[in-house]
Length: 323
Image 1: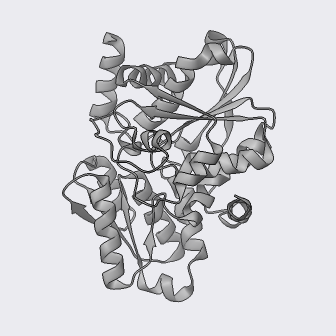
Image 2: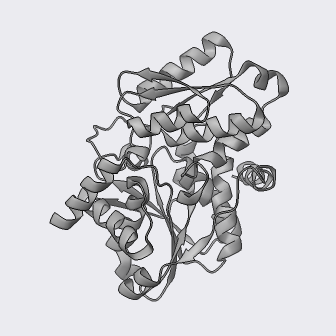
Image 3: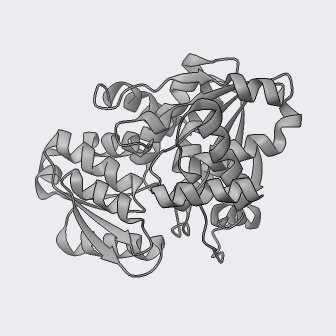
């Protein structure tokens, strides 16, 4: 963790000004209703609408000139692809993104709009990830991992540095978990800079691969169901560097239903006037479910993204109303 923490601090300095600091905003409504001091980390206001640009920018930053010249390959469910595409634009690096066929059309279009080439792969996000790695080996192009790379994790960990600077007295931080890059990096930074802050990982009940793996003590395959949190969906790559990191930094785990995710998305839309994607809703739902434990305390929720298709968001609002 000491080496990763050093990389996070270096990334915190090195990815500016391409990657801006995001604000930590107090939620008056949630603070009043939950009887705790609630702050929202506005990663959804990033230029690409997601925290993923942090890891992408850091990975491309540390690549050598020869590696940049060949172009890079990555795999994504949408947000990571946009982050790599934007980082490639700034660095003058060609980007090819492999995406699973279940990726929403809006996220694919956003990746293409940033100048990247998109290759569709039939199957789930892990299938796309494995094919992208295979092509990277065949072509000799660097692979920019969505989470299974310490440089990517270090970039995501800059969220934790910012949180510690903005609110050093936090009692807990709620983070949606997919492959573990965001919570692994954020948790590593907080353990060094704000050790009293509890790191709470939140999963949709429909997609719990990393959670099941943590419980088993090794990475396992877990059946998945469709979820509003498509940005965090998918299996965890065998041997992922995030697994031991998450074992060390996650203090508490929570799972939430699709109805709870939908209600959380609606809560943010009504109270903050922000549209957020399902993965951000997962983190908010985790706080809503456990709020009694944090009554009178100061907590933060990482709103990790806003990239949600209109029809998906409207469907979530209907689900929230009927739940």
